[in-house]
Image (cartoon, rainbow, N blue to C red; front, side, top):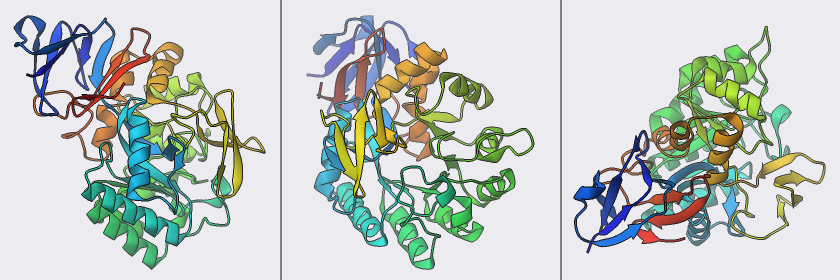
Length: 378
C-alpha cells in the first residue's frame, strides 16, 4: 500500500501548500494532493510543522567520525552520506579540502565508484583546493596549495565527465581563464573561493565560466568602498554562493545584507567535519589538531576549521536570527543548491516522480523525521 504523509504544511522546494498530503510508493512521490483526496494507504499523520524535500548540502568534509581524505573509499563516502541523511541532508557533495595530487585522485576514484554503486545521498564530489590563494588559506595546509597544472586540469575534466556532479573551488590567481573554460566545458561547477582577489579578477573568472562562490565572506577579500573585492563582486554579479549560517562564520547582520543584495543567489552549506553526527570533541586534519568547543571547530590557534552545524540548524538561524522568510530559508537548503549542480530534477523538490527524500521540521524548525527513498531514517 502507498505511504500517505499529511498533517504538516507542505513545502515543495519553492512554495508552501496548506492541507495537502504526499503519496509515496516505490521510493518516489506518486502524487501531491489535498488531504481530503488522499487515497487509502499507510497513513502517517504529522503533528504540524513543515514537510519539506530532503535537504541538500554541497560542502561536507566529513561526518559520522569519518573524513573525506586520501584514504576515503566508496564505503567511507557511503558512511558520510548516511550520517548526514540522519541529520536531514539526504543529498550531499562529500568535499575534499586541499591535499596532494595522489589524495585527490584517490577521492575521485572513490566518488566514481560510489556513483556506480548508487550510494544513497551521493550527488557527486566537491574538491575545495588545492588551487587556492595562500593569502586566504583559512585552515588549508599552505604547503599543499599550488597553481593548477595541465595534469590537474586533465584529472578534473575527466572526473567531471564521470561523476554525477563535480564542484571545484579555486582562486582566480591559481587557475587561468583557459583552465576555467575547460573545466566548465567538461561539466564541472567552478566555484570561486579562498582568494585575495580584486573585482576585476573575479569578473574575469566569472566571464571564463565560474558560476558559483564558496562560503561567502569566509576566506576571501572583503567589500570595500573603492575595491569591492570578492565579496562585493559576487554580490554585484549575483552568482550563487554558499553561506555558513551558524552565526559564527558570518554575523547575522552581514547575512541579512547579503540576502538583500542577492535575493535568489545564496544557498546554505554546513562545511561539516567528521564530528557531525558524532560525539567527538576533537580530531586531526592533515596532522593538525582540531578542537570542538561551544559550537565551533578551530585549529589550536583559533582559526576556524569547518563548522559544527547541520542544515536544520542553519535554516533556524536564518529564520530566527536573520529574519529570513521560511520559504526562502527552506529553498536555500533544497531547490537552490540542487539547481547549482544541475540536480533539480532528482533532488531538492517534492512533486510527482521526485525521489521520496523528505524531512519533517517542527514549528520551531528542529528536525523531527527523515525519509530517504521513502524509508524512514529518523
